Amino acid sequence: MRKVYYNPVRKLTLILTLLALPLLAAMPRAPQQPATLRTAALESHEGMTISALPWMEPSLYKGKFPKKSPFNAGVLAVQVTFRNDSDETVRVDLDRIRLSVRVDEDNRQQIEPLSPEQVADATLSVNRKDPTATRKKFPFPTGAPKTGRNKDWFEVQKDAQEAAVPSSVVAAHSTVQGLLYFDMQSQFDLLSTAHLYVPNVLVLEKGHSLLYFEIDLSRAGSS
Image 1: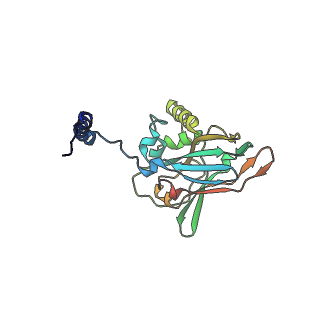
Image 2: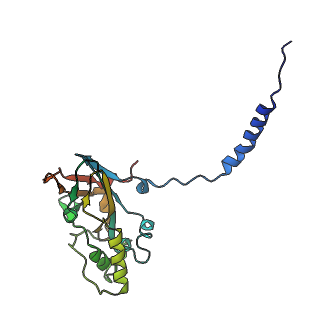
Image 3: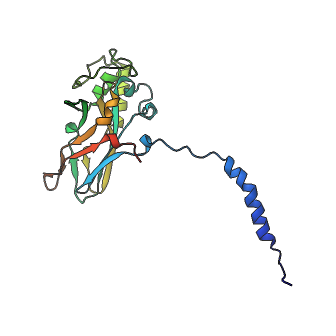
């Protein structure tokens, strides 16, 4: 007759496991972030990677703009990251970056980035309409009309400056990250056609430019 040996440790482990299952099922799971908050569109070549993530969630602006949000006035912030994996320092001409959008079949607009001062002008402009309203598409302006420079203006200007790309120079094996601002006139639906065009990235030691970067922002947020 075969003897069966009793293993109390094994039985205790089984009991503890069965007791733990309901507790594990009841524990709240960490919410999965929407794709638009998790991923950025990017392009990489010649040791340089540029990624871009349009901020399309109003909540994203609260940390950088606690009082007045540019997004509510139709201004889009794009978080850009410049990663230089090469052995040489590069400089990105931030002023020449453009947000290219297709207004209609025969009309593609090149939107210039706003300065922190222009972000404040646009954010506090009394002529801004409700961003949720339906608006007719038209050519974009080159900058927001100037507004009075009161306390609110200086606060928004300061917030925009502190959140902006801090430097145009990216040292070897380093990363620079910050926001670029574009006056979309609340026509955020045009982001489905948008590309971020970065035409001038210069290798300082050698004095030559890298091939331009053109990042398809319609792909931002896709996993």
